[in-house]
Image (cartoon, rainbow, N blue to C red):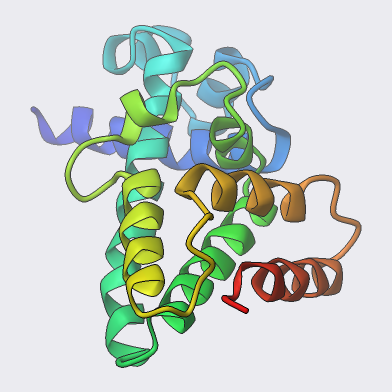
Length: 180
């Protein structure tokens, strides 16, 4: 890819990320092009559909979040429940700050597993692996499934008035997940 085309693609992704994060999936391709300083044709050459653009952003965000799971395992060595809780809290904070990612996690028109389900970017698989480790250690209730954690986390993020509300909700979630 030519250098100018690479720069345009990067500007489009940056503008689209900011637009989707602040406004959700309803932002138009025309608005993204305007913010990137390019024409809508340039956006379309790189991303034939708005969904393709959003999927590229989601894949990038998912890879970033999943990569952080390894660091969390290192910092919570010997505490698999702590690793799971730290990852869920990290993801919840990302979702609270990024309406587009939250909409994708909630299944609002984008298949998150298809967009970011490959190796190194599968958020649901990461939750499942961390959950399994914590359950094997006896720290998390054995009846909890990854889908439960995902749904409960989404409930923590939904309609948040302010970040302290998120911390309170996460504390309640984590207390409910712990083995008795």
